[in-house]
Length: 509
Image (tube, rainbow, N blue to C red; front, top):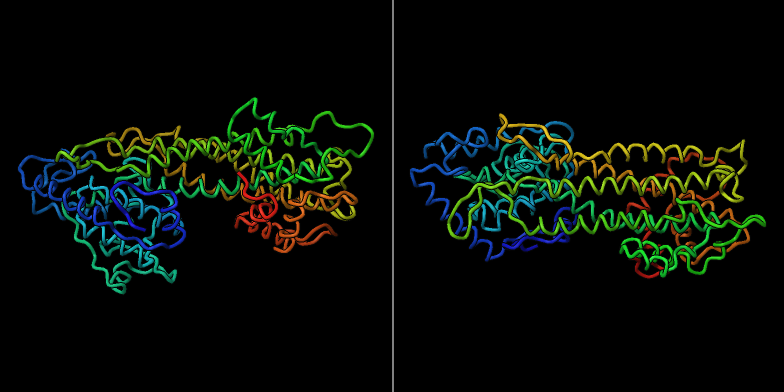
């Protein structure tokens, strides 16, 4: 993965964070780094104070720092800001964080020397992952504490995880891989800490995960509609064309593709046909579609941020080094929260369909709780409890972090974005949504198999065959349910649900 001066793409981030891709600096980036460093060195030699170069930081920015203390100043900001607490952050998040900081450094707007950027790439390529903690970022000035723990590793201090997964002193790991710790100079400590890289990395990964989950939700919604003998007429393209939200049309088209050839849709268990299906079935494309459109907006914000150079102060092409507020995480924080809201609603409507499948009064002929011998067997009763508990937590996670702010740095940083917190709760929400969809998949496939004498759609049959091959058992007497649910979760999480459906439908939108 070659890092230049003009930013990176979402696929680049995923390749490095999750795929372990190697990182190289382009010749253009090295030249830009050197040119910006010349400007910083020239300013450092002047008697006039320049923020981040020859002053303290934050509320201490009024103190002019003499030349003999500046290297110590840069070391001290890293050490003092590496103040995170709580559980360790996942390896993929830390790798995204480091890669995105390197992206900004390579823009030529930070004043960092080329050798510092090369060390950042070397640490990534060696598979060394700094220990970063859950708490410590307020989303202003960027993700300070998380980035500080990464910078500490570059200095050969603190703890890091080696490629074998063992946490050890960072200095030992650098030495084993032939990496020389960096000796920070003017502005470099500050430049390594001042960005939205953690929250942006988590946004990029959440969007990738949600892209799969929204397709998965369209598939499970179609399976539930089929199991409930619902009508697919509400999915007709002409109905969605007159309310032209792109996401809604895509979700309806996906559901219709999955249901193509089904003998279950439109049937009824008695002579009183339903005029309309329940909202959770009939309005599935509207809810999932709104979430898809939210994702489209979030993706636009991510693309802009991926093309940004976020630092304070920044080195401008005309030689000025100017303070700014571009590190504020509001643009990223808002969409992180928005995605959590959309994910909560998607989980909620999926749970309502599951509950309908289990209720003999609303399931149109299915046994209570899809049990083998209701009364002796409880069927999927408590699977729905688990799903409901996940939905309830999703609603709590939908409360926006970005609506909060807490003053810091002696009121110098008096309004913060809380974007890191928004990103952390979105990661939890994405995991919960996966489990919720897995429970609907488990219930819907069992319900379809209980509809004897009616043939499901070819795509539905492909999903059922694949999920059974993955170890998720079908109808029968009560058994230890947790392993089945775990297998269904892994099936959805790994993208296998989408793969199975697309083996019949072709690529879904």
